[in-house]
Length: 88
Image (cartoon, rainbow, N blue to C red; front, side):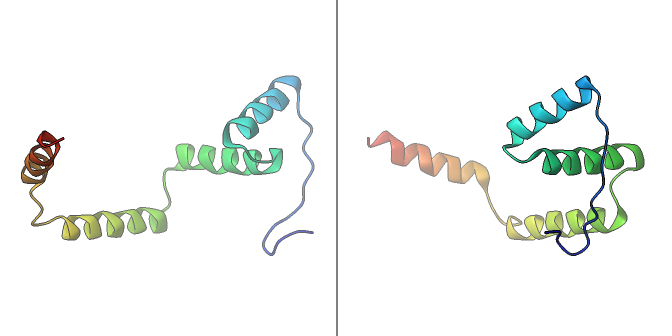
């Protein structure tokens, strides 16, 4: 059963490509089809760069993190944790 927006296709693979797909699917613990989809998308992003919509989403996420940690003093937090650990 195909999910909406998916298209079935057939690809003839040589030994090197078949081995690469096997390695990727084992590494990511996914099916060969999922490994191929991930590889195609990653290659597209390397060739053309990240799409504008994704880049904008990343910028929004980064700005949210900046807002969340604006008044955060990491050095003070580390000092406090070290003081707590000193009692153990």
